[in-house]
Length: 176
Image 1 (spheres, rainbow, N blue to C red):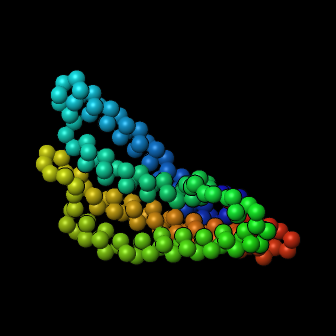
Image 2: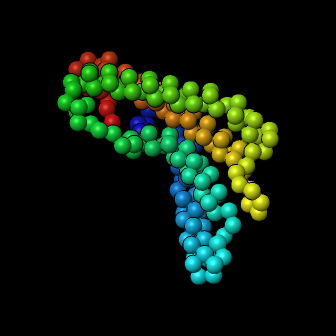
Image 3: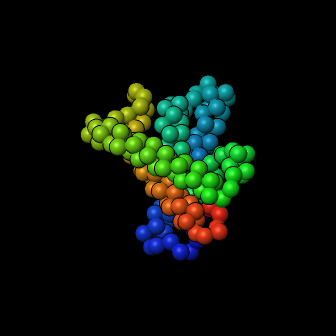
């Protein structure tokens, strides 16, 4: 989390994560209204809103990636600390550093692996569904890669914080 000692570029990136998280939350509200409207129209008038399944399918992916990095930043991901809490501070830091390395690698690899597909999606105007509703998926591919890149970046920061904590004499690891 923000400690007040972060550099300006890191504060800017964290602010971007906050904005993306807020957009994801607003998007959830919009999708909720859309789904309720679809159910109401389908039930009361036998007239569903066209394209709701396609819109929701694409939206869920976008929402997850809009909120992934910020959730990591605020330590909001589900985590079992049963064993971790029993470890001495340096061992706890080592586990956290290993988790950060693995997280940065996995999410960084996701960006590299998905880059060409994202570019191709933009090139061909990739979409989900058929007429009358065709939902573009190439912006979602972009959000996925942006969210994965920011998550990898946050894992690097997390690892650095734990490494710094482990290096301090008689200080415990930061932990989550």
